[in-house]
Image (cartoon, rainbow, N blue to C red; front, side):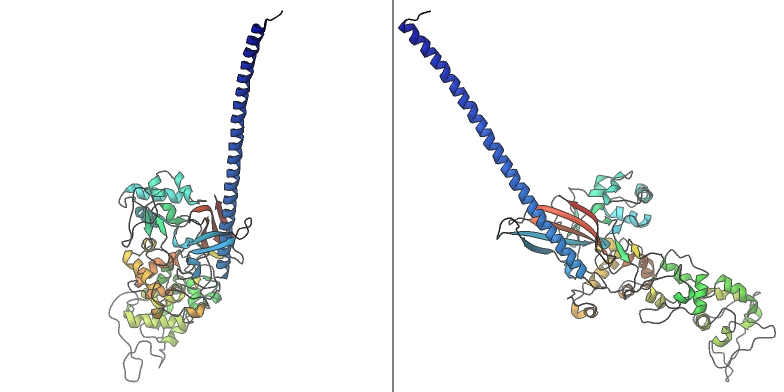
Amino acid sequence: MQFTKREFFIFYREQGGLSLVSTLWILTILSILAAQLLYSIHIEQRTQRNFLDRSKFHYAARAGFEWTLAVMRDDQTPFDSLGETWAEAIQGQVEDGIQIGNFLYYQVTVVDEASKVNINIADVGLISNLLAQVGASPDDARTEDLANKIVEGRPYRTVRDLARVEGMTSELLYGNPEQERAVSGQPSTVSGSASLQTTDSRQSTAIPLGLVGLVTIHSVDTSTDPNGEALVDVNTAEANQLTEVRTQQNQPVFTQAEAESLIQQREFDRFAELMEVQAISDELFNNIRDRLTTEDTDEGGGEIEEKTNNQEGVFVPGQRGTPQIPDESGKININTADVETLESLEGIDQGIAERIVSHREGQGLFQNIDAIKEVRMLTQQEFIGIVDTITLKDGDTRQGLININTAPPEILALLPGMDPQKAQAIVERREQDASDALQVQSLTEEKIKGNPFTNISQLSQVEGIDFGTFREVVDWVTYRSHGYRIEASGVDVAGKVVSTCIGIIDRTGDQIIVQYWQQD
């Protein structure tokens, strides 16, 4: 087929237009693809930079964590308080391993796990008090029911496992985000979270009002005395071990006969039970009762005639001058016998004899021979003096004790026998100025702030802590800790946290063990 010139021109123009359109479409598509490719490359580069930044700041956080471990290893004080180096917020820097001359920054906080309540150890009463602290009604039967269910659900692997307990609410566990509570006139410093402020000026970290901020499963202490010697377990120790128990003033407490009498009565669950231990056990009493008398009234009542035991014809209880001669039946009058005479009874040595004499001098004559069982093994001062050297449980460690050097007053007030006033008195005692404090510098080369407790017996010296309170709370407290929560963060130059790692450490052994690890 042949075209005229006009027809050929028209055909060529139409074909050229189509080609131009096609070319423009192709160029458009290529432009879009190129833009997408460049955007993808930009996104990938940005992702790589973000990943690199997070990796670098995670490296910085780990560096802070490792530095803090070194600080904890160097801590050789026989106590643990908020006046020590480890309790201060740590800030530092580490060289950027990629960009020469650049530095990465970290910040670290350390929290003593013994400043919290151990949910795996606390009894129902303490847990009920704790629930009331976080908002549960103390008079509501459901509060005690929830406390019982928490105890039944033990052991817990993490604090957040409490969420599976029937009756637990998010408000009780995590706190109410809309609620803010100020303590000691200070508002919460945690944005969007209710919190408790510790009143200690050296650790003002806010504590969430929910259980997650008040409880732990990692509090642990060693079973050693302030000198690092193993505690004596009075529930399992042999008599010769008990005779080695000494007070803080290095005075012996138990004689051989007293130790044997204690062994016949033991199975103690609480320290307070030691104050009820008889100097003469039921078994010992049954062995000697036929040799005891209170004159004519050992069993049947009537007046007790006091005997003379000195040259002036006056009875002086406990005088060692002239030993009493047993009557014709061989019985010894426990109201007139001196120490040496009482020692002639089988199973009674000087220690028990002196306690018998001391009791009748302070409490009056025995009305019958059974009354001799009212003589107690320990005085209050002896009890206070030995609580730092004994234990009631086997094992190299003790779980769940509250550190009176680090716990906030809100936690201390929950313990048996305590109240907010007594808790505040403890805090004020440990924060005393160094000029007024007991000498603790001799125990360590570190400069210690405040006046930390160096043993539990010192708690009895705090104003407002009477012996009744001391006896109740002593089962729950310590003056040191071996479990800590370390939170280390890598921060940019603007102070923004970029990466965080959290570890729970245990330093009861020769090496520090990381029991729990979390990183973002």
